[in-house]
Image (cartoon, rainbow, N blue to C red):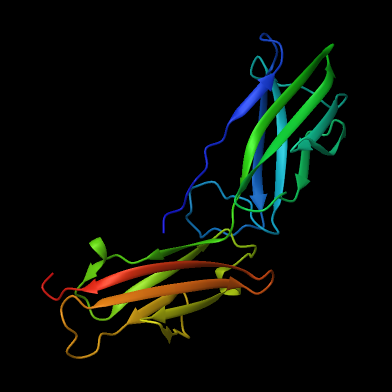
Length: 219
C-alpha cells in the first residue's frame, strides 16, 4: 500500500505591496515511525497547531496589537489581539481537507486574509514485502507492517492481526513482523494471500493492508 500525500494550496487577499503572509502548521497526536521525512498529517483525535507570520524586508512584524481571527471551513474557531497561533482538533470525517483561514481585519487600514488547505487522513498501514513483483523463493517469508497516522505515541500501543491463506498468524515477540514458513512440497506458482489489520483500542480505528505473494523456487 502506498501512502497518498496531499498537495497544499493557498490564496491570499492583500495589497500587492503588502508584507509576505505565512501560515505554518503541524499535527500532534498522529503517529509516524522514526525516520519518516514527510509531513505528519492530522487524524482522528489529534491536534493541529497553526501559526502565522507577517514578514516585511525579511523581518517578522510585531502583531501583538493586531486583531487576528481564525476560521475552519468558514466557522470562527478563535482569535483576539495578537493571536498569532491557535490549536484545534481536525474537523470532518477523513479523508477530507479543512480550509483554514486567518484574517487581520484592520492591518494599517486594510484587511489581510490568508487561506490554506489542511488534509485530515484516516490511519494507514504500509505492508513491507521486499519481493519484486510479489514473487519469492525465500523460506520463511518475512513481512513488516508499518503504521501511520494513528492517534498513539508508540506503535507498541497498537494491536496487529495477521492472516495467511485465511488462517491467523501471530508473532508474540514482534507483532509488527510476520514470518511465513512454507510447507514441504510447496509447488511453484502457489499463491499466499497475506493480510494485516492494525487496530487502536483507544478509539476503535483500524487500517488494513493486503499482499498476494507467489512462490517461485527458481528465482
